[in-house]
Image 1 (cartoon, rainbow, N blue to C red):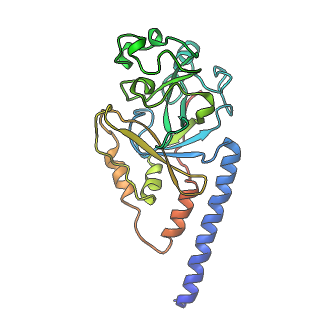
Image 2: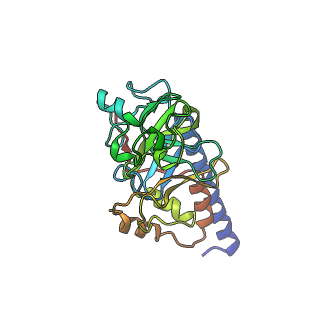
Image 3: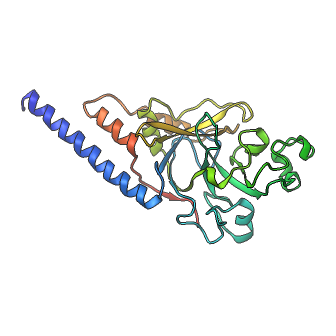
Length: 272
């Protein structure tokens, strides 16, 4: 057995190699996707069943790899998707990450439903089950204060705009579009951030879900959305995976590397 000094040097070089390899992968992925950070670790189920807590999602700038059905903003609305046969994560419409100005919480990851124009009475175009108002006068952000997108979590009952989560989403507020996901791998990222994939279920209208992302400073950020009320079908497996991260001599290197970017396996593309 080598000396303690030799073992320390070996561990140090192992840590340097891990961080260097991950940094190269992160840089290449960022160049390919056009955004930073390019990966999102989902914490809870506002986008079930398309995205589950513990999934790792790859994000690109909206115009990159955009579908033929996309608007000039690189986004396909749910209505366009239904008309043109486009599906993303099992349903029509792009899944986007957005953050309106002045928002103090993390960004939101939800599906684009339809586009509205400034001054538009969009109540008549809304799904009646996704609003609680009787007319435009009772509906938040109606008439539309500006051009933008109406958005909604797949497992949420109401539009984000109807609940007051955000006004119609301007194209300039988009952080990116989700292109694919890796089941469970985000649990490792969440565990290293001191979080958990297992969340108590709460009513959709009371709280919001979160998803952790590596920040531009290699720290921890998050994306957020209104929480669904349905069961978390993969909670047991995610909780078990997040519990496997323990202490050890390489933990700090793993924490730093995972904060920068997380690797992927069993990649699931979002759709055509």
